[in-house]
Length: 441
Image 1: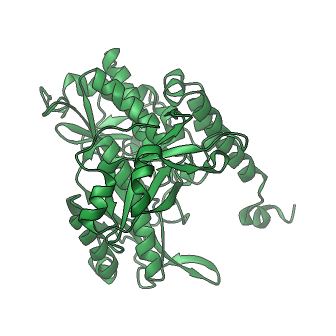
Image 2: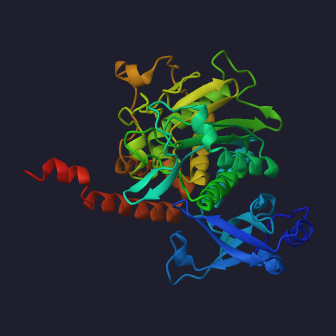
Image 3: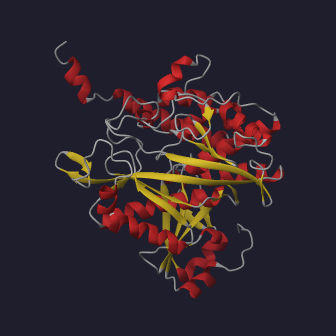
């Protein structure tokens, strides 16, 4: 029997109290895919104790068809009642294999990183800015769902926002009901693009909620005849979708990034954490920008709106969105490297591990730059550039001993097999642009 941490109430008790008839027992694989079994509430006690069993080979976790099942143990603390289906509860889960924590599962990788932080006396807290597009399927492919959303610079456009009021207000209302404390939502810089923000929390909670948020947004869009996508760059001429993460480190109730912060906004510990992230930035890109399409967004050429809003250099500044790392106010920093396709469990584990090494080694992030790097980046020849392709990012990740140790042998091997396969499939395809450019050679 696989044991879990003791909870105040079991899932069976919560089912009785909340009127739940089913549980979606869910986990996230190495590619960021969400997998689940639907378990009747009458059987949830045995699943909470022993796990829901999944064929290992089908689970994108690096095990073969000869391996025994993985046991997926739901975390009662993560329980979310589906607002649109209130007799169903969703639970994030930890993965076990042969009765032991399975080291290659993304949530388990984040658990290990958070355990390291705990051993140093810290709690890692994060918030995520979730951007997405609302599209519709047409005979000619995907198009912006709102045919009137055509402005060249549509960011914060009131009319475009309010034409999607039914959808946006429904999502925000559900998030309010769930207690996530949403505080802003807007039309973003691309046509058909939106962002919804909710309050920061423990990093594992943030990752769990981000997984559920993507599921909820896609489901509610489908119900309205639309397609919601978190794809980094669906359209070449429009701004891509990020998943910017705000980071802070706490000792009990004290934000250690804020305590003793200078005029730049961070404490000495905060700058050391920043130094660690910057030291591993090229490798982190392999987790933060994990698809071929990610590099259409990252460091992209100009968009119709006049800005890509995505970084090109390993740099930091104050409240300046042209940098990879931004310090918008005292006590936290934002990482703008991350896009909508990222597996947030792996991203947060990587950021935390790199930052903790920065603290241990007292690394310096160097001098802050208060310039528009979209315009003046070339004037700073010592700045290191971020990877410009998936293969470049993967090679940087592969060479990073710290992040490879974090992921472990099996997760690393499996991740690279999938991602190198993705790169090879991309390289072998012939694009429309190539045909138009070279057909008359």
